[in-house]
Image (cartoon, rainbow over all chains, first blue to last red; front, side):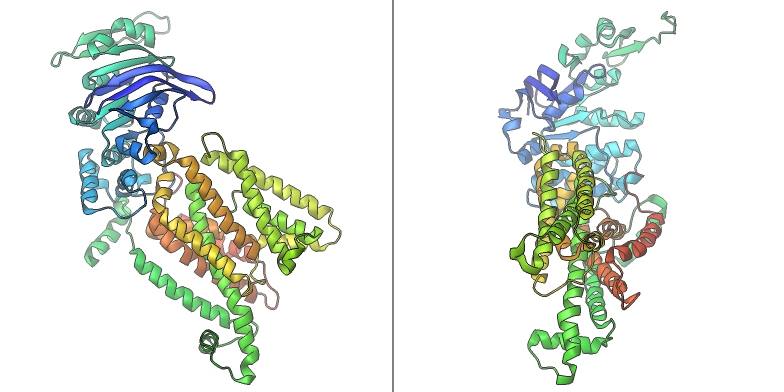
Length: 261
Length: 362
């Protein structure tokens, strides 16, 4: 299903963090959200997975206003992998993934055989099936991150919201996760810090600064040396990837005198 | 199946998987242990009665049988004094175990216990206020317990009102406000005791803060039984919500759980049940803190499994603690709260040092 953020505004403690955000992602596409620290990327996502109610505007999934749906209905539509996910209890990996079925079971009850198979497949897709009986507190950061993706997949959403999903992941699993995202028929909204990965996987990229969209379009339209300079304050070059033609960013590290090394 | 379980147990230390004992079996075993413990506890005391006689008296009471005239005294001890006492201990142990599980999930903190949110301090203040200064005369001999119950509910209400925001409750606010309010209620209690007309206030305070089952009677037992049973039943039905809540607010929201609302009703439920228990037996510490941890060591973190076992474990523990409190230094009685800590702390530390139990992310 397609997702539209329609003049979305989100406040935290009376301060407007995200203002007038209008973005859309066609069904099955990957929309990357990039921007410097504090630009409102995470807050915008929280308005989508219903952690923070919008102060203005709306989030549309297909023809439905997400914030007007019952909570469990919204959670069957949108799943999220958030940055805040520490638990103090030592659930097993299989138990955490099974919690993805919660919105489908409003009044408790056991998982059906089909649901257990679904959870199993979700774990296999992100390469954590072998960890099923492990306690969550014994996992590495990258393993936990993949478990959370498996839980989101087990939720069977039509929209997947990912807040820095490649955090903690080693290179192989970063690429594995991104190719899974690109190949899936889910509509994906992902905040990404690695601009090269964003360029490689996103159909469209939106750039946020100070709570507003400053650029949006296909990777080659958005990722330019000028944007790096104005939005990120970074000196860099953009070259096409020799095989895929996607934009690749090369940075130069300024030395203390500010001259290029 | 047996070989798989054995293989898992062997593998456990190496790759971090934990063997899961079947919950139904454990619950059945604990139920049998509880029944046997209760029989022993009812028989034990200054007038020691063999388990067979105890069982015969209990059978006679339940079926309306007759007792030989020369045994009526012993029968009275068993049926009128010790049975309600042991049952009250079992109920309160069960309730504290279950409420401890709920509060730890609510505030996502392994140090949480049922009294964290101000309930015990409020109850003690209410009891002292009524006991020392009078009031609630309509309740007769239960006036002080009534005061404790009202104090507990008042504390919970104040905590709720102070912690609630337009978006509902949040775990951290709940803990901070609960701890702060506990201090406020304790201070209020100290002031009451300081200005109390007689010295009795200090011993009233000791009872309400350390607890005891000496006041158990058949009249008040049904109230506690209903509150505890209903509380546990509701929590067991909401076990999966507790699972999701303990993953944190962000994740709970994304899974369709209204954190603020769930926390509000959990606060109401745990405060109500804890308030009834405190009114009946004072604030007995520690059981509500350790029982959830001990049970998780055995069955893992899943709240459905934990809530099937924690009430039974709490009940067994409390029956033995009460027995110790009234027999260790007989004819005097130790405050139950002191015994729970003296026995509980070493057991708790031993269990925490065992390999394989992780909590709080470390």
